[in-house]
Length: 563
RNA sequence: UGGGGCGUAGCCAAGUGGUAAGGCACCGGGUUUUGGUCCCGGCAUGCGAUGGUUCGAUCCCAUCCGCCCCAGCCA
Image 1: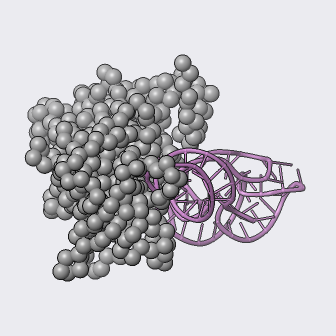
Image 2: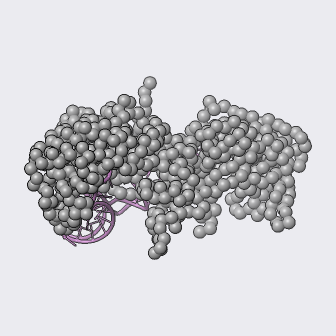
Image 3: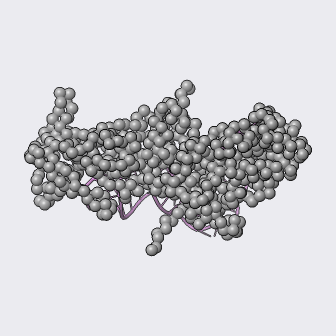
């Protein structure tokens, strides 16, 4: 069996890896990792990092680790560990037996710190947080040395040991690297390596009251695990010199840190702070509200992991900060769903339609194809009768040009059923159309006419006597502005840009074959879009989320006309 | 005014001394019992700007312009 391999486009990281392989820098190995901090839920931006790291390991037949960067017990929690693992499994990521935690290395990290002290490369500093800030200098002025910088090694060793033993209160002392307070890169101005935190850790409990900072943990964990390419986002570029300085001065293997631009999507927010507010202040239902950019939300909305992978492969990887386009994500989704989703008929905004010449009480079973893209999906029976519902949008009393659907006196096709002709429009006292009276042509059963007569439009429908009522949720962008901070007035914050119409709830009808649909089932509602069964569904009530609409060229024609 | 990055089409993004890949979007056409899918075609005399080197520059050099990140005992 030959497997057609997609031409994954090149990017600067692959070029770098290939250069490393050419020069044998890492012995031809590629070993990556995804290093989340367990302090929140994964979102679509994390997916880019995951796909990148895991994808590279796969492509170069290397290894991939999952490592939680859990060095700040004040923010982290087991709940997030579980949630992150769940999302990674959903994405199909396999770290085999390599699930690690930075906290697994606390003993080793402590020894590394001792090594630095012994080499005269680190010292215990008694400055307060405020003092440290003042001593650090500014972007343009160099800092000045801490008065504790020249403590003897023995004293530093003793103090650090006592920090570990819990002799000092939070914030009273830190361990700092001894580098250069005049360095242009502020990260090199004697950065804090360890701080005192009398806080229990979700994994190590009360074992520790000193915890390493990011810089003292991340690169060292990479080193311990034999990571070759430590891929992170752009804002860590300034940390690379420190990453390398620490490896070198501790005297351990040094991976290569590579920085790439994180993913940004318009009309949504990705920052943890903002996401929390949306949930806490009730702007969305929860972390998995289908309007959220969290992976949980994408999952609930009906997105497939395959689509997310495809999207990430297509947006590429670079150092240019940019905005990805929802249109591309949606394209990837439709492409995947088109292949796999069963077609069914559902009416979102029902309009009653009575076929006057169809015998009262008669019911017919008609054949319907389940998926024209997949013959193996087979066919099903759908029942036809005298009273139906069609989509309100599929009828126009005064049809504009190029409107192919139903209109007074016009003949059109009911999908899989018959040609019908609209004879009469019935309105209520307010002038609202409440019912259509039509006739059908019995000779067009199945939707064909053998006299060569053609109709332009084909409508979806459900039979009133068998249709199941359903709640249908349509989603729009969370924000009205591509950037949630755009155009805010003086006193407003980003929530002022929330889209008040991001959720529209409809009550329609679906065909009876959906009676036993299960949560998560993905379907195409013919001519409308892809939908999935929401967990809010019960045996009493079916709830569908619109995952994404179908491309709608009629809507585009109308839009153009308006302009 | 310190340090680190980035500027190729509406959005992403390859290429890097030999005359601008690809995808999305968009436009036009064909097929179609989904105005879906699919198929065909179009879409940068141009690579932030200006000089220079060269037979030849998006690529090398110089200068300039624009944007982003960094002053947590967060990651």
